[in-house]
Image 1 (cartoon, one colour):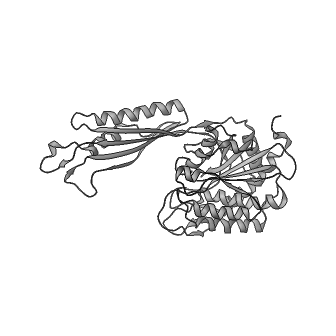
Image 2: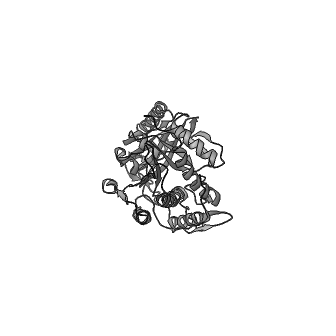
Image 3: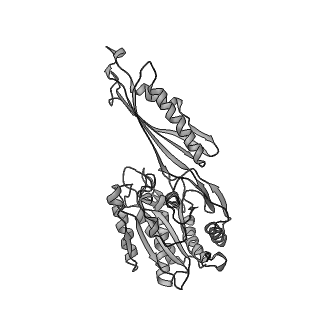
Length: 388
């Protein structure tokens, strides 16, 4: 594996800064998709955009690019990153501070997942110029930050790769996430009866009170080493008003577990808490309850070829591989659930994703580029050849 040279590292940083400055919150991916497409078509590559935007209302579809191997091979590797970021106000001003990238303002940086985007684009330049050791497919998805919406709409049957990687875990390089949770979203709408709070409160039925009972009664936090639950959003009553018994209230909650059966059990507990709150005889409310499994979890074997290749590549780059489980979901969840090839989620060295203090060090950014080259070299090693 030949590490990135000075020109490649310089291009990596310039491109990363440029990508971070392009607004691309979920649903507004068009500008970043166009910039990525221009970069890849400029290398002579064909960029195929699917119909996900029309189907989902996202700003762009998913982008798929194929880079052929320099020599005939049965091995093809998928490399996946997402185009969108979590919502934020203001304009991202990426700056380099103390050996790393940060946001100069009060916004996220967008290293999740533009660090991976920049790495894959710079890697593609070398692969086109010098030839790839194996076939490569770049899958760049929209709407990842909204429950993997883009990847879930992607037709995995169009993939030719037999294994793949996503660089989408904000933790130290070297970590390989072998398990990811099943994730449920619960949305409860409480409907009571409005009344004047000072003149005839006894004729009202407070939806806010019912929502509060539901939040207090449902399970919260880390329930065991595999399971979490959270009420993340509560809204109810007329804005700024205290003199109205509120008629409407909404609670949004989630449940995650590495054990799918346990996830269903806890969802049942949340649903029971919502129904009990709505049926309280002191102030009964109607309840419109929606439960959706937004993505399925997975657990991968440590001896999976994609895992062994990642371990080999990490060691070649000077890192000790470490197996972890994660409480987050990535496009790997959607690809695996849809019957696609095994995609493994690798930590990319970014820090504090989704926060205004988000950061990625120069070293981590450059090492992920080296790791990409090492992954493809390891995938070409006869020891890891696909089974006939």
